Amino acid sequence: MSEALAQENIYTIDDIYNLPEGSRAELIDGRIYYMAPPSTRHQRILSFLHLEIGNYIRSNGGICEVFPAPFAVFLCADNSKYLEPDISVVCDKGKLDEHGCNGAPDWIIEIVSPGSRGMDYYTKLSLYREAGVREYWIVDPMKQTILVYDMEQAAAPIIYSFADTIRTTIYDSLEIDFSKILF
Image (tube, rainbow, N blue to C red; front, side, top):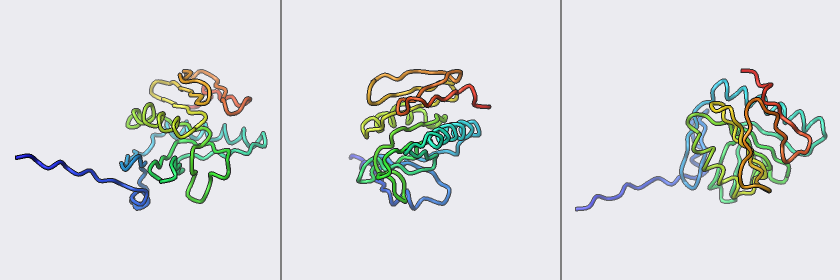
């Protein structure tokens, strides 16, 4: 006698919108991935990067906008890939509506948490590359490294440390000095 295979639920964007207030999750191809609350260290890095990028854009009259998490990114028109990157930089205002970004942001930064390591290094890298994200940074506080993927030019990332100053690829003159992050 054979046992029936367990049926896996297929979730939709409606399930994301119906989560209890304060819950954070992402949706990838019918599966929900819940996100743990970020640590203080994570939030310090997020705040530092958000301010550095936002101040640069404002000081240089840039057209791009920077959005810290939680901010909805719908990578596919069918809403099957709903993500909340730690930082999204969007230069095409036509992609923005009241719900978030429809399509690939130009630059995404993910700050690795213990529970997000596989998602940030593998799953999201693949999704972002496929969707057309131009630049992707993986900031890993535990390893004190930053992997910078120039999705338009190179397949392999450049690896930096928290002691380095990193120049972005989408802006010729934006440099971020990671040694200025206060822990």
